[in-house]
Image (cartoon, rainbow, N blue to C red):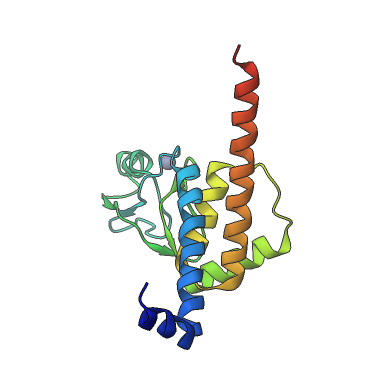
Length: 169
Ligand SMILES: [Zn+2]
């Protein structure tokens, strides 16, 4: 590192802190998303037509079932949408992909700040926490929840590895 680079880092501590925050949230998101990777989360679909209720989200097969049952004329969507909360299929309850609005993220932060985050963190928990952190990676509360969850996941994984080592002859 050149002397000038060192000086400029020291001269702009706020930039330095910002870089550090991005590193931390990036590291937490890596762990959270890897843990959620076992989930198969499809994009939401909606139904359309004259009398169709366009509000609810469905997985593709449940949306097609609505059309087949005559409650809608066509299937719409198949892409990610901003939500005020997490997204599940109206019929079968399956988790669907989403991004959070600022309001949605603050609701999730309130939820996680109000409960003691304890392991084990399921892949679905990791998915929701990652969505919350992705909405605003600079939010200190979201960051602290994300890091805490990532640390719990890493502890779970090393416990599993340790158990695996014991089983081996
Ligand atoms: Zn469904």
